[in-house]
Image (cartoon, rainbow, N blue to C red; front, side, top):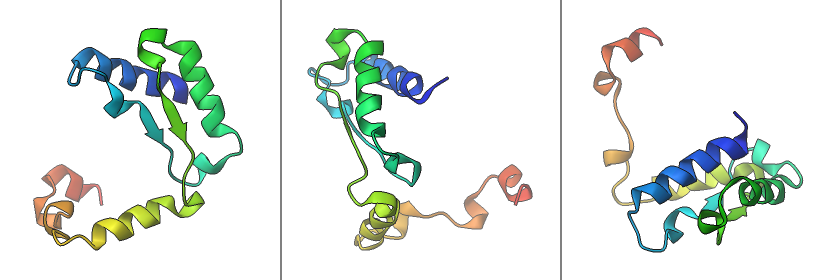
Length: 105
């Protein structure tokens, strides 16, 4: 499955759920990470989504390249770490992991 197909599947499921009237909450895709900085990826992904999805769903979909380049994920983590609720619900301890996950470490 290609990236555009995986994303189209997610968008289709969100649309089918009908959680909002206009569906605008899932129509903005923000890419993050080093691979997301590949030249032309955002434009190509947006085009492929428009070609792959029915027009009733794909109207208004935007794919945005990483605003901070390869450091986008780091900037997101920095924002979360500055929240008054951090670490709280954002972090878990090793004891909170399922036993199976601890064995895989």
